[in-house]
Structure formats: C-alpha cells, structure tokens
Image 1 (tube, rainbow, N blue to C red):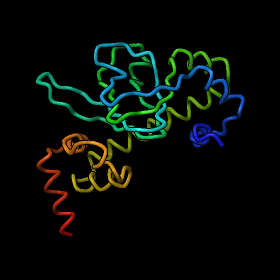
Image 2 (image 1 turned 60 degrees about the horizontal axis):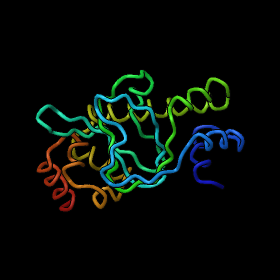
Image 3 (image 1 turned 90 degrees about the vertical axis):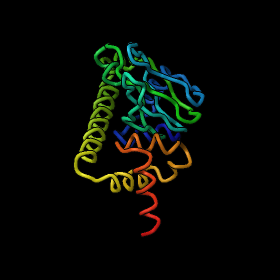
Image 4 (image 1 turned 30 degrees about the vertical axis):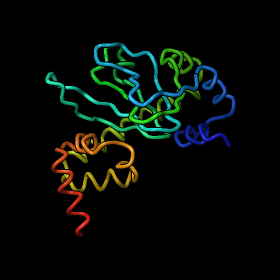
Length: 191
C-alpha cells in the first residue's frame, strides 16, 4: 500500500477516492537543505507533508538569536498553520534542515475540498486534533520536565537527531544552551 495513504489512514480511514483527490492538488517536490518554506512577515499559502528529511520551525529575536519551536520528521505536516488558517503573516520561519522530499499543496485548495467533501473535512479535523495534541504535549514537556528528561524524550522520538542537525539547534529546541546540552550528554554517558 502507498506509504502516504498509510500515513493518512493513521488519522482516519481514507478511501482511495479521497486519497486521489488529495493527490491531485499536491505536487511532489525536493527541498534543499536550508530552503525556507515560510518566512516571518509573509502570508504563507502552502502546507507540506514531509516524506523524507527533517524541517524546523523557529523564531528569531531582534538580535538574531534563533529559538526552535518544532521539528518535523516524516510523515508529518509542516507549514505556518496559524498563519494559514488566519491568512496572516507568519511569525515563524520554516526551514528544511536536511534535504527533504515533500508533497506541497495550496492550503486554499485543501479548504475548498474540505467544504465539498465530508471525508476530507473529517480528515482535516482529525489532523488539526493531532497537531493540537502534539502542541499540548510539547508545552507540558517544557513546564513539567527538566532539561535531561526533555533531551531523553527527544532522543526517544528522533533517535538519530544528533546525526541530522547541529547540537546548538537541539539545545535551542530544549530551551537550554549548547554548553548545558554537552553537560547533560556527558552525564548520561557516565550513567
């Protein structure tokens, strides 16, 4: 079975007919490492389903310091969802951290399909529920876990993350410094 259909079926039982409608409005693309799909101040128009590679969403302070908000791995959706839903400028930058294979779709096309097809409307709702649950889990991690536990949780979700991206980006995601992350890694190795 098509792995993209398997992924969508993890949210809701998607028929072949529904899948074909979605496939019709999507374009398969390769993103280069460092390529941006959304920038602060710009109103995004596209949503992406990641097939391979890794992306991030980050916020930049006025002095240029970057704070990683989210990492996106296969199979997941990436894009400025709040900005897309509200048709407002993005506050975050979305960047391919590695070369990525994605399906790109105009968000407005998905919204139109959702209005006219109950199956796509239901799938859309389930995906939004999933995104909200992941967001809430992330917030709970930040307020209820210490840095070491957040790091171990991240390693559980993305075991090879240290091979994919630099340590300073991992540290930023964990809301710690790269020095703190080094200490945590040394402590874990000793244990």
